[in-house]
Image (cartoon, rainbow, N blue to C red; front, side):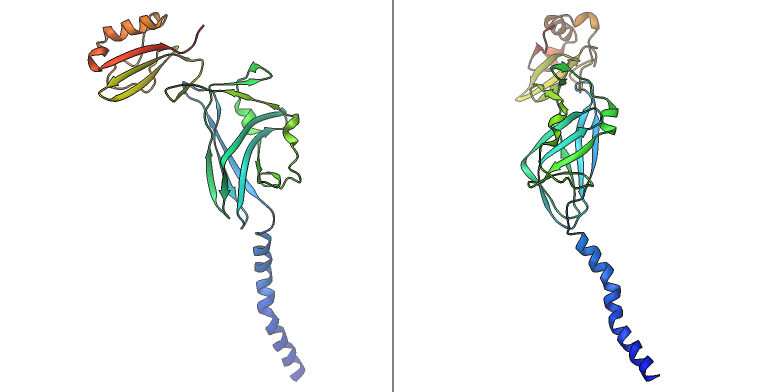
Length: 241
């Protein structure tokens, strides 16, 4: 009985260690390697085409990292959909989630030909991040920083802006007007719709018959007595057909 008592006492001494070992092992693993999950948000509006708008990155590990570049790749179609340089570099702390906003663009090209991105391009794409010493795929560490994406056809982007408003081929005219010291810009698309229409306009739609020239649009606005609601205004054609 004495021997059994001694065995029990010795066993009880190591029980706390046995209990804590899995916890210590888990915490140790949390500090090894990089594991990042990502979520891609894409969309379109009346002035810009379907494209990636933002990327959410969540650090699964208990260690910080610095991100220099973000790549979105569709391996099935060999497309480098996005190559986003983080300037300045992003710091993703342990167990932190950040949202990276992607600047919108007006058009996209592949091999010099205009390209319309599809939802399926995004659904079958993967996110890769450059953390300085390597490029890793989200949720799986990549072994090398070699430019593995070189074999993919990049989607080049064109950005058209007028007074900081990004627009695509749907946009026809810009109306710039002043009220006091404030300057406002509205975009008219090929359907005659006035983007972000405000109270100065009696309608949010220019008739199609009045979209042939900037002078036609100006005449329509004058018919609406638009000039009486503002201090001054001008109509500018955004693209040459």
